[in-house]
Image (cartoon, rainbow, N blue to C red; front, side, top):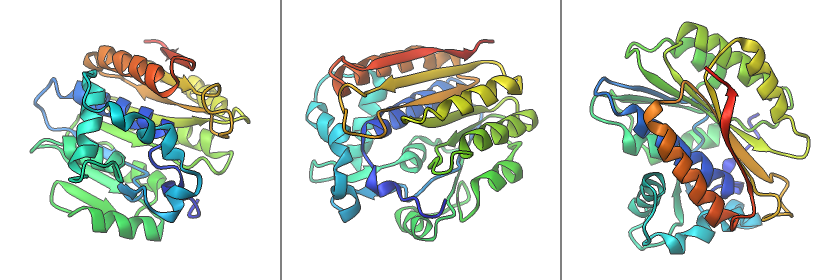
Length: 281
């Protein structure tokens, strides 16, 4: 949907989980020196202004980075430390107002031999993406439909890669559409790591995503999920999760530690966390 703008939600509890766990997965893939392909299929603008009218409308960032920023100087798991350092690198004044999204995270982590592609079809979001980042031989910015990009860019020539998908899910059919698109991509690029973010909403349509992936025949699908309903009862999106296909073994313990920290700090220990196999090996 070209009406969706993430600026209204940037920095909230779901973004904390999303960016920290994504960083842990990427770091887990760096145990090998071979080049890595990274695709951010729904990149949006890459960096968000939390002083914008959109961000200030509902102040969702108060459930995420706004709540946690005062903790940045404490000792943290590696994934949390990485996330705080990324935000600090964008804010020389010590604030968190310039909030980096997934593209900024992947861009900051990419090594010299890695290749990153960021796609977005929304005209304003793509223009902002181009203003935030300088394209290069190793970093492509594409005004391109995510589902078409999955077909056109995979399999990756690098043989190793991570595909990150966090669509708006404004259309109820998008949950199944994502699952089918990932299944098709997996059959062309079975060695890739696929990271799918999903929201927890009252309609429970994330179960459509789960069921479609279970029917696909893909194995090794890890679920990392946090239900924040008790902590933020007034929010429609009461939690979120990540499905990770082919999760790197080296990322398992860092992800567990990150989830424990987020559960303790974001929900004050009142949330319901899940770290289990949706589909085992």
